[in-house]
Image 1 (tube, helix red, strand yellow):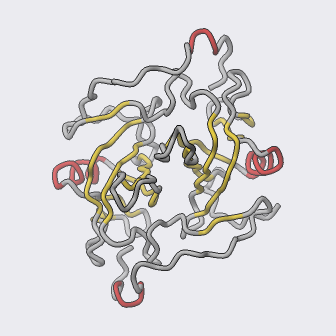
Image 2 (image 1 turned 60 degrees about the vertical axis):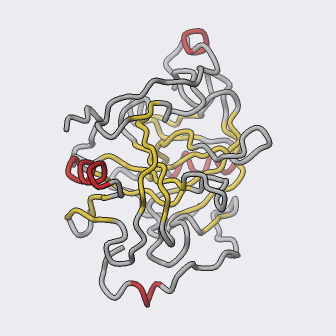
Length: 134
Length: 134
């Protein structure tokens, strides 16, 4: 597939992943940001669930492979510079390897100090991740 | 200010910018992604409006400097790996230099072909940007 995107020097493009609105989730919470390459883009579009390129493990990464917390793709968009992607997904379980719904669970104040976290984790991360998949 | 973030080799961290929910905008649309360094983070927090690092112009970039389309910061978050930021902002006018509300105005189909754009630009980009600010 010819994407005609502006991949970076490593052949990667950032993907922002946002909850598509549902009755339970009217606000489109941003769940995570990860990196995609040509291979992970093709796998995502062919299978209908998000695949990334794991920069730490240097391999294709099916999100939810271990946890079952897959991200079903609803819609997707490219930005005006063609160097960033946005996916609307329906997230099974939580997106974050820590158990939270979103990886952006830590709010900061104007001095960059963490605010108390009031939401609860959706799953027990120790239970779910016996292996290293994140 | 000591941010304790995982900046990349160029001293940058990606910032995802999302419309904070308002009566007119109940869904939190993702407006853009740009890069920040230490200096742009400090300027953003001190002034309360988004500043980025322009990689093309290699300088501090106050979003809205030319257009007036500033982004007033409401809340901000760091992700679990401390290598990506999320800002909730109230966007004046449109975020995109093309005149659209969001830089992610181009939706793609499963073959990565563009779908027709049904929304209208919020402003005339040629009119607004006499200079190169984006």
